[in-house]
Length: 269
Image 1 (cartoon, rainbow, N blue to C red):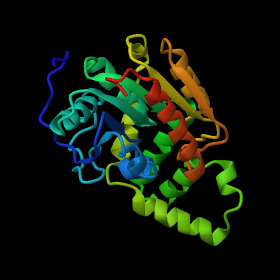
Image 2: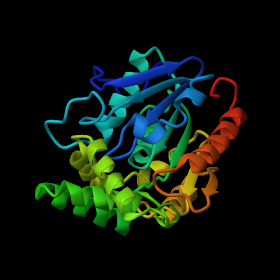
Image 3: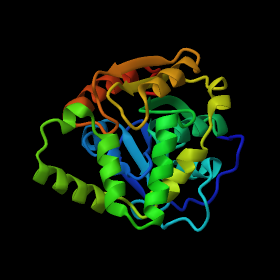
């Protein structure tokens, strides 16, 4: 199989799990494969091969020595899939991973059979742009507890936070800080520079856009605009769901994603 762009030697640490048609997982900024997809990895791996590369500074991947570039990250994800023996795949992108997934599809169209874009954006909306700037400035001042507080505020819904007591909230912030990978600032620097709006018109594969309507980091309108810019894209909403999906909302997400995968042609599903 040939593509429009040569693949680099893979240098991302990647989870590989399961068997069957391949799903290439693209995680969000300041997260990782388990952080985004951990609740559904075992379920999806029952009938799919999962390839989950970690961006520089996440999982077992070394921190980048220079600013991340979207084209390079997209090529690295594809190189990870090919190195795992997968020549074609559906790409599941979350948050920043949605923009990565779109770029994967436009740089390597022969390899991509479908896209699932969750809490996604083509370009950072004002709320996300402000959050990325805050994260970078707080991190530069070594105020990582405040970065964690901002993450909790932004990535959980008002519904999720409503009944949390002070002690539980402190524990949540501590856990959030501990889970932040070393590459968090690099990831959010890329968030602030991403713009895949010109790519959308060139997508020719089935696309499912999932919009968590309680998202306070990537506004739901970003998902709506993403879907509107892609010819034939399906849009589903997760009412009240936060940027980071809780167990119930992830179960609903899984139902939508499995239904979408079943509708794909046999080669792509």
